[in-house]
Image (cartoon, helix red, strand yellow):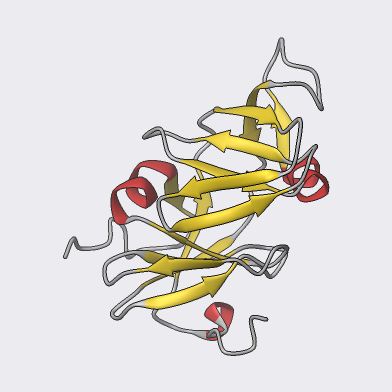
Length: 153
């Protein structure tokens, strides 16, 4: 489903970033549902993680993907509702210059990116879209990334 998306790892315009270690609040879904993200509606299943970010934005993550990439912040225990941090992994980011729909890899629901938003490619090969203000607050450059901060539109 990501065949028409650019390979950001090979794109010299893409920034190399990591998620800041800022805790996010997480609730595990009790039933199947739909989460209204800033970029569009995304379905989730019972047990999936529903995260609330730095600006109150919400998004779902399939439980197995979440457990592999987030760690609980004490006193939260793994798998319980509470605070979590994303483990630091290389992410590629490219500012969108035109609208673009990006499928959520595990649900195929499209996220609707707008010019100025960021297209992200995570270490597991999945893609996402994030608003510029949230990107700037949530991500930092990796070692050796000299194009930071990126210019604002």
